[in-house]
Each structure stands twice: as structure tokens, then as C-alpha cells.
Length: 204
Image: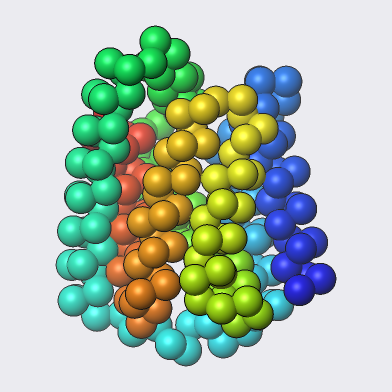
């Protein structure tokens, strides 16, 4: 547990630096996000070796991952429209999130999110954090704690919509991992494709 806590503190610091209005303008967001996600995924593999032994990559899991990404995109599209009607701050905060891709090559970002960032985040948050917490405190408590922590590391952004987006996505991916851990490859695929879809291909 000590190792897990240390990685969570590291994640909190890294995500705060990336998203905080005070520090974000001074860092290369995509370079730091890529390095941060990879670092956490490597630490996950070192501290919790063997997580991949229970994963099965096949066409069924890939197809399921595509379907989950599509449904999650639709959920966020609907949520964006509803939140814009309810809260005057919603759309400006969403636009601020999209501001991080300004000036970047969309194809480079797509490759980074699909090949590195999305998979690395799942390896850490579900493959290590949720798995470790579930083994220690039970599957339901592990799911709840990992989901809240995933949302909490985004709090430094001071962006309510970003925190809520992380919470919703964490509920979906964490819930699927809670119910179907054997479908972890599908969850990884869905995270990677959803990232690219919502940021680059079909922005909301």
C-alpha cells in the first residue's frame, strides 16, 4: 500500500502541474501527459507485476472496446448539451479543456492518445490502483475509491467540468473493470479511442 500511496501522490502532483492555471501555461501539456502516463504505467508494472497475464487480446475485446467508446462519446455529447443549458460556466470550461490541443498536430495527438496515453492511464488506474485497492478492501470499495481518486487528481485544474468528466469516465471504466476484469483489453481500447474521438476526431 505504501507504494500505491506514493504513486498516487506523484499522480496528484503531475496532474496538478499539467492542469493548474498557475502552472499549465509553463509546461508542454502533451509531452508531460505522455511522460506522466508512461511513468505511472511502468511503476504499475514494477510494483504489481503480472497484471497482463489475465488479459486476452482478441477481436471480440477490440470490437467491445470500440462500442464502449462510442457509447461513452454519446453520453458526453448529451451531458455537454444538458450542462450547457443548466450552467453558464459549462461551455467556457469545456472550451478551456480543448484549448490544450491548440497548435498541435491532430495526427500526432491521435497516435499519442491511442498508442500511449490511453493504454498507460488504464494500466495505472484500473490495472494497478483499482486492482490493488480491491484486493485490500474488497471489489466495491476498490472501485469506489479508485474512481474518486481518478476524479480528484483533476481537481487542481479548478475546472468543474473536467473533474466531472473524469468522474463519469472513471465510473464507466472502473465499473466495467469491477464487473468484467477479464475484459480489461476492451476497457483499454475504449479509453484510447474515446480520448482520440472526443479530443480530435469528433470534438463535442
